[in-house]
Length: 364
Image (cartoon, rainbow, N blue to C red; front, side):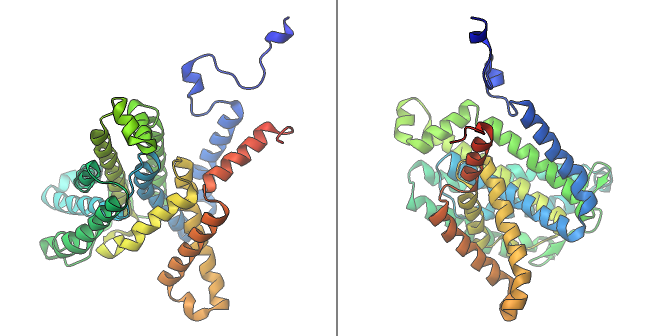
């Protein structure tokens, strides 16, 4: 009888244990090892170019989290999300420059940039809600057209002709060294931006992961699966849809504010419509409805473009010089390949690999 009461495998006695992020000792060790590699090993091994690529991956993750929330978790299509990243970037940059000029003490204390990031989140979130209002009445193709309009109205009209030229700066302007500071921590190099990127990515992913476990997250999933059934069950569909747009816009604001710390310059050309499509591609390739998918998709698309570019110098030297064309070609081919061979994305394949490892040697 005692043998029958022995535990078998992983079991939980409380609800907290069942919903913990890391449920076994093996997962704890694996994640601790990952943090050690990211925070200690990578900065020691890689130099400026590799860290700049890592920062671009982190920026893509931050920008795509909002797209993943809307498409993967709330079921709302968006094709103009880069517009809200642009709003966050310009809001953060203009606030930082103007406040540092008016109140130099705040800039020296390193308070301006954190405040600008919060303001960027609020501004991008509200702006995203404005273009999310039609989701209360329309969906599908019509919502796609609305989000596309957000891209063209925001970037091509409002930012290019008005916001970017505030103060007579012209379409693009730069942020002087030392402008971006978190308290005493001034961000001047790719290494310092890398640490900031890691912190923002981890906090954002943990926030979204925990949010999806709450009543709000369950309401979003219910709306995604069947909005009529969700409304019958008492879910305020309009309110939760607009809340999804606000949170997605706030995440875009974080991405735009972080982008300023990597280039120290702001220009509308960084937020084109093709970049909005790029974010949707990250979600499709990485996996819809998964934070893992956001990370995997950003890593794949960024690295594949960096790896293919040098090889083209030997095969097609003329094409290798046209970086934008190569990036678009890789993006299109990747979408086709994944839709044909792995339509559920990299995250699904990763989950299957984990299941195989956990069930070994009985993984059949």
